Structures are given as C-alpha cells and as structure tokens.
Image 1 (cartoon, rainbow, N blue to C red):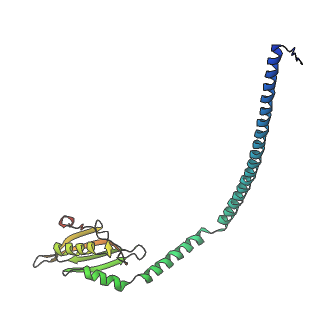
Image 2 (image 1 turned 180 degrees about the horizontal axis):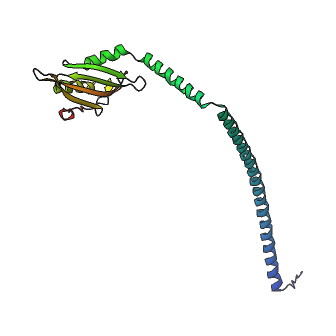
Image 3 (image 1 turned 90 degrees about the horizontal axis):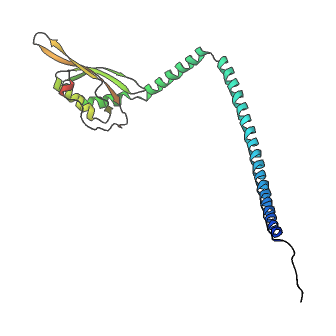
Length: 205
C-alpha cells in the first residue's frame, strides 16, 4: 500500500488557485486585445480609404469651380440675354402655330347667347389666358353668357377676373348696354371640370 502525503500548506494551495485564475484572466485579456487591435487596424484602413476618396472629391469640386468661373468670365451677358430672347420668341411662335383659332372661335360662339357681342379677344398663346371684352343688351344676358362659360369644359377661372359697367347707348330713348371685360383660362383639350356656377346677380356692377 502506497501513501502520498502533500506537505503544501492551505495558503499555498489558495495562492496557486489565485495564480491560475489570474493567468486565465490575463490570457483572455490578451485575446480581447488582439481582437480589438485587428478591428482598429481594419477601421483605420477603411477610414484612410474614405479620407482619400473625400480628398479626391474635394479636388474635383475645386477644379469644376475654377472651370465654371473661367466659363462665366468668357460669357457675354448681352449674348446670354439675346439667346434667351430668341428662345422665348421661338416658343411663342410654336405656341401660336399650335393654337387653333378656328376651334377656339367655334367653342366660344356656342356659349355666346343672343344679345351679347364680343368686341375684342386677346390671347396669351403660352399660358392660354385669354382676355375678352364686349357688350350685352342687359345684365341678364351678360349673366347668361358668364354662366355658359362657367359650365363649359373648355373655359375656367371666371370670375374674379371680371368687370362690367352700364353705359348709355342711345340718348334719345335712354337705351343702355352692359360693357364687360373678363379673363379666362382656355382648355383646348376640354380638361376643365365644372363644379358649380359662380356668377350671380350680385357679381354684376
């Protein structure tokens, strides 16, 4: 029979356990440090790439600013103004050619009642805002004309751009006429959707 006797003291055994635990903690700390170091190096590398890209973008932006400044110095303001004027003129010519007077007058004629005469039509061919002036034998006829316009799918925005005035047409018999002027929006494709009549007797002056 073999007998093993351990002569180590209790304090020695406790210290040994503490040393083993401390060694394990140090080893874990070293592993964490190595991992964090790798992450840091990777992040630093990416940050360097982004920094280089940012510097390149700033350089390109600075070069573009210099080129733009050089172009602006070489451009004559009068030439730019003349070019814009030519472009606007071309756009107006195109709009005039597209606008169909025949179709417009036919549509307007359908909403003009008896007793109402049109004296002047002034269109803006780009915005299709049209000024119309004329006269009516009575306020009732004028109101009928306005109501027809408001119910038409080809005209809109009536009033508030509307005014009227009573004038003496014949001094001998005291006959009067209602002269009027209004601005309307013409919709060639009939896109205006009628909602409700707006004109009434109180709207006439």
